[in-house]
Amino acid sequence: MKKREIISVLTDYNSSAELENIYEELINNAKKAAEKAYAPYSKFKVGSAVLLENGIIIQGNNQENAAYPSGLCAERVAIFYANAQYPDKSIKAIAVAAFTDNGFTKDPIPPCGSCLQVMLESEKRSNTSIKVFLYGQNKITSAESIKQFLPVNFNSEMLL
Figure 1: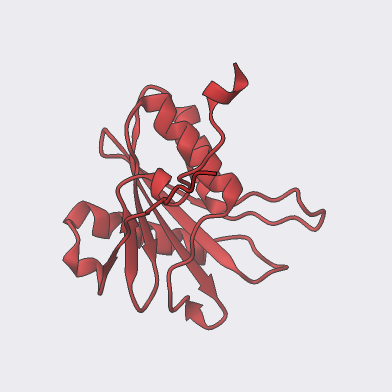
Figure 2: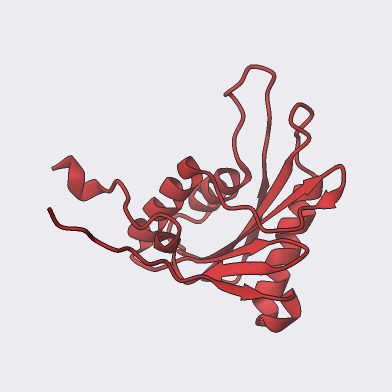
């Protein structure tokens, strides 16, 4: 038997003011998107914003449906739209924020497994890492790659 230790590196910031201006803008876009989400059932509104290599920011938010699981998460809405509209532009960064009846969540919320898998595919597609920013009122958590959240992942090499 051989044990492996896997370490993920995340950085916590006290506020978006500690970030580069473009990432602060990205987080603000994710927050705006969260407030516009369609979440009449869960009341858990999530917004996402992706920054493309050309500087364009695309917003997405969760879209619920009474016929679960027909809805879609904010991260995938933003990524799929970005890839459909700008297929030759890589995603440089993504920000995620969640909003409830009590306002924005106190702590950052991570993307679900399905969204992480889609983000990994986007990294592979463009052969570049995607920076991640997760917003919470108490702190902002960031990582240099999606792999920090899903270090053991299913990938295309496994299909061979």
